[in-house]
Image (cartoon, rainbow, N blue to C red; front, top):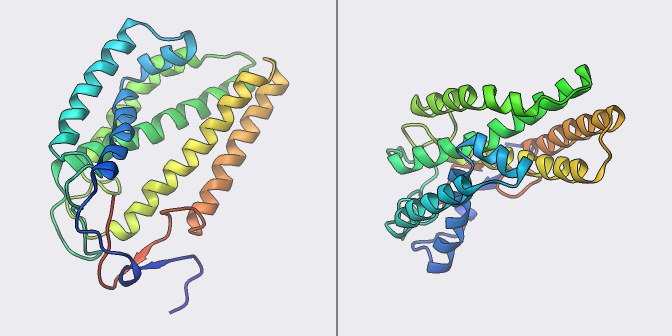
Amino acid sequence: MAYSIKVEYAAHRRMRERNTQLYRLAHWPIWIWVFFLAPGWLTFDLFAAGGSVRNLLWLGAVLVGTGIAAYRGKLPGAEPAPYILRFDEDRPNPLYRKICYTFAWNAVLNFALLNLAGLVDAVMNRRWHMMQIYRYGYFPLCVLILLAGLFGILPRVRRSTKGEGTERRYFYGSVWVVTLAQTVLLVLWKTLPKNHATDLVKLMVYVAVLGGVALAAAFGWLPRTRPILPGELMVAD
């Protein structure tokens, strides 16, 4: 069968029976960042005003919590051995994976959507209300995403891991999209003067990067964004 996008075959992937200590350690900072971002108002304060003691206290709590979880093998990628080996095997999705990926989806979606809303608002009203948008918008959206995770609606958070070969591409594709778009937006925010014309430029560039990278991910041009078709074995992080 011919496919219009790039794909991978499970039978062609190298099987990894154990995760090295370096591999496990490399995944820890990812989850530190995910949970550090969880209280969105504190994160906004960090980027807007340089943060406070509360940011340091929360970072300390996250370091301890994720450190214990990583040591016990209860963070995705930090397990002693990969949990998922067969692409189409119907295995229960462990609770720690559901929790971690639910909060990861929140980190991916929440900030990107609120920043988009802030840019649109600034262009339309010629005034910035980002503080108000985060104050009143972050937690309702966070609760909505957490509920979607609780009910197994989000990719990689479902009851079974059977769809992992496809769901992983949605997750990593979203990470690519948001990370690159947010990075470009941060650069523009720091370098461009603050006026209506540059606000319009920021919005246009942000939307263009979101759409362009999403298209690249959809066609499987970016790492980990190709669907894994049934075959023999796979290893998922």
